[in-house]
Length: 117
Length: 108
Image 1 (cartoon, helix red, strand yellow):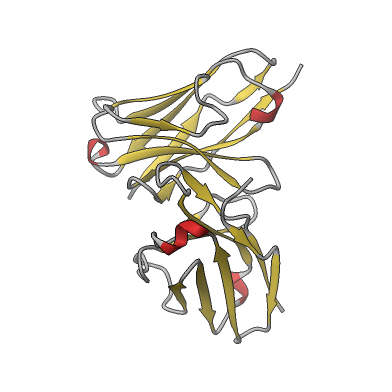
Image 2 (cartoon, rainbow over the protein chains, first blue to last red; image 1 turned 135 degrees about the vertical axis):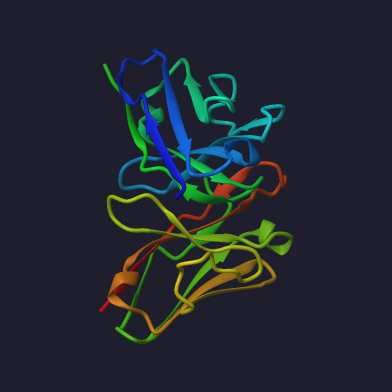
């Protein structure tokens, strides 16, 4: 069974940093593209970033480019999102998802990030 | 702002058919993927590619596309289909990904 479990969310002050993790199990992690998607509670889904199988290609939404860094450790079956210079508008539930270059077949349950003073 | 537009809400009588649409220029070149999201839960992929369902998704869900408009159709809607539905595809550059604005489906 495919499982994706996010962690690392919490309350952080504006300008602060946070690193999210996504532990994967039930499949060969290194075979798949991975993504981060976020959702402000009560609002729609927004794609954040993706990374290819061997971490040689990463892509970011314009709203986070230069502030967020996606990475992965295939030996640990773990996906990461390093978030720096956080803003109030980054407040959201962050989901990791296993997919292809452009879609998302399996999702974790999400971790809430709150940026507030 | 999203490059994929969906109607905010639709309703359907139990057992009837409902069509959810997604409009955007990128849909002329790429099939969308459709997701179902129930309150408090993560999204679930229901349709991908031209009209493909992952295992476990009932065959009452189907997808179609024409020009800049794609549709998700639920034929014989059930109470458990009440949820938010999102489409996603690539943006106009083909490089970034976008989601539709979402459609809330109510089953009466």
